[in-house]
Image (cartoon, rainbow, N blue to C red; front, side, top):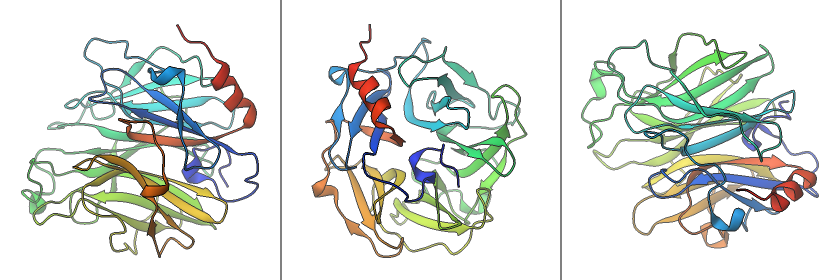
Length: 306
């Protein structure tokens, strides 16, 4: 079990005293990454007076869709969407979640012709192979022509992946998940010896834009047994945690009415919308959730940023 990964990879063990970190962005992502804390997974309080925790360091840089994972050595790794139309993702690391390394670009699709974008990256420690796995959404011109035109914006995304041991050298990118139609915003939940890939059906002809789940025997799949949708249309950016006996999948409802919400399940099959029980910072958009210790929570609360 990957006890050092982001909360989506944690199974239930001891929940008393757990604290949770929500890293998110606002507006277009030009202002940076924001933090909020919770002790129950429902009530989230913004840190740093509601101001960004990390700000972009490069003139053309956005910081959208942040995702943080804890490594086996205790080092935290953050990835994010660097810009709308680029073959790169953002990366930084931290020993304490307070101070972060210099932000740099990872050229994940730089050698692939026709790449339109790199969206919503996530990073996971693959314990079996002692390496990191990166996943993200990309449209590549000329690929999957059979589903071109099923998204009004023209995108034809699939989920891609690559691996690394040091965030300097990387394997070649490859298709990680293709259910036969455009998909974005994949996240992984591990529980009871199985892995679950939660993703967004991106089609809008006719309108889908909902969350589904595929299952597999390992962190790399193969993925099968895709469920029906368990959120309403116009939801994206899923992130999952297990809290007590329940699974929570958070999402960003990005069409009117705009809100951050969640659904809850005890078995990953039957879901109840609990958005009306959630309290998120105003303006929060697609982010990631991390289980942290009481000491880490206290350190974040007491940190004073310039």
